[in-house]
Image (cartoon, rainbow, N blue to C red):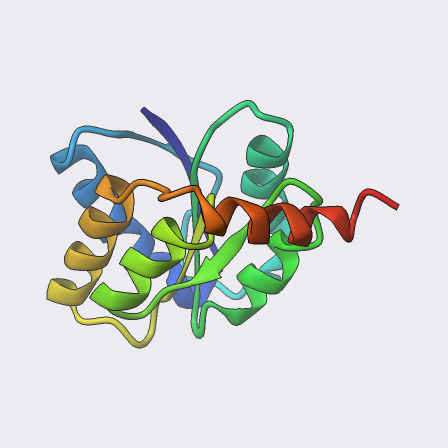
Length: 146
């Protein structure tokens, strides 16, 4: 699967590691920047991934900033995006199983290399459970149908 990925300066180092992890688990990262640790504004990079997922060009995406929050807030402005801030194995599982998250938002300054690899591997292999969770995800989407 081609996976659009982007970060700001605070997530740059983690993004570079995440790209290697994605390749290792069988995905092809499509890097929308930033391409250095020089200071940038996270919304300028989040929009590229969010637009690709929102428009259906790509099924899943990854965004990384210092805390993960700014990227997540930006991504969730798009009606077909379900961005999830993920920081642990359990949150990786639940955001896919229960929320059908389609953009993984990571706190680049907070995750060890081991946790980063576990979260990425877990998130990408976990499937949405549907059922009662689908009803709930549909309620979220109904908020933007107005």
